Amino acid sequence: MGELSRFWRESEHRYRMVANRCGNCERVYFPPRDVCPICHRDSIGKMKPFTLSGKGEIESFTVVHDAPPAFTRQRPYVLAIIKLDEGPSITGQIVDSDPGEVEIGGRVHSVFRKISQEGKSGIIEYGYKFVLD
Image (tube, rainbow, N blue to C red; front, side):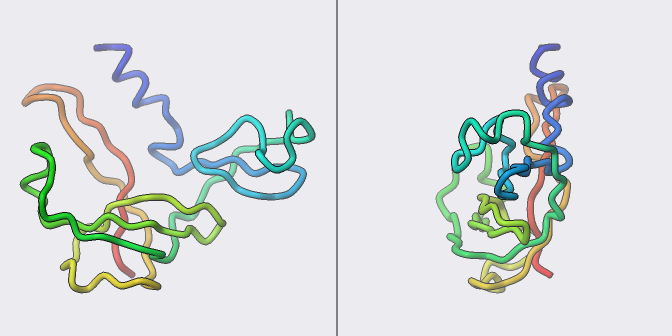
């Protein structure tokens, strides 16, 4: 169990939304990549950490009514594709709002929330979700 908890603690992009920016083309990648898929070998050694603002716009979304067992208490919930202001598009859950309030083009920002827990005394996993602005 120690290895799993260390994995979560050491996954910097899970807690701070740390991406990489290519030193050649300036494209931003999240989660981070070792090599830019555009610049290929010219990007080796030039991928630099870049902290995302967590702000973005909803590109698409769906309301989940028939949830897996671990998420039945949260239903209905909204999953969205969010285009971050820095460029990457990511999938995230929209929280703290009625699903009817969510719309394409809506502005959101990230918040740090509990994702899951293994049993009553197990490891608690945290990560980012999004709220409407």
